Image (cartoon, rainbow, N blue to C red; front, side, top):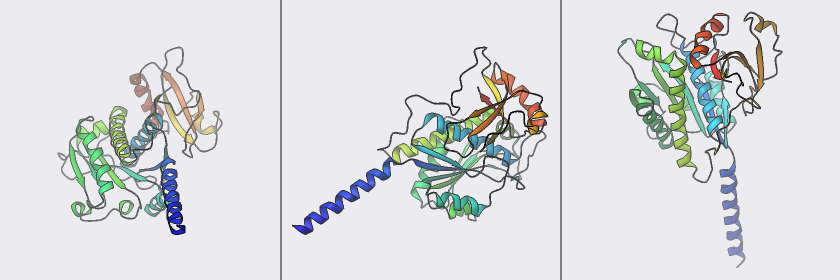
Length: 311
């Protein structure tokens, strides 16, 4: 009888630990590839961005969609500015925080300019959870996003391993969002619209994956939220602005670094799990097109990572 009691107690503890584990937030690490002195693929066409900049923009949109539409997800970025975390740093960050998923964002290049399409890479096709996530993302690229999908690939296709996939302890994928050397895809990658479409496809692939993997967790928000605490649309109908920077600690809106713009800077505190809790917005525009038209001037004034955002 005593043995039965012990076994029953162990069973209860086991069930309890599973329940507790499934109630915690799912941690996603978003890794914008390259950064700092490592541009990745350099822009192949005049006026276009390098890979590091495109990866950061798409990653930022991806994280924004997750924070807006999902709950019980903690998003952690390997970088949010133009810096270069080493490959070891990226791997160690993901492993040390016990991340559940790792998505690295990149753009491709080829000697032949006709080559185009997306592809999502895993370390090995034998890793079922990584392959499931990669397949879901490529499905979204091919259907909802209207891109040419080149499918899921692994180290055997590439003839080499990718460090951030090989050494991370969780399901991990590296997403190639398109070829910067193909004029049509390069043009698409360098528009805010294109970056949003690509990010939303990755978002939907991730969402469908976690819903299947963790059926006991409620991920879908009944009411989407905006990451901007207390923000409302301006009564004047000026619904778009340009985000020029983000920071961990608040920076004065009249800081010297902002003065070259000669524009009023608005600081907002985000309701986010990211370390970067403050963003800085300039301009008020009635349409996304107006904001995009003004974006080039802001980027030319030194804020090349600026993006169009809703107010």
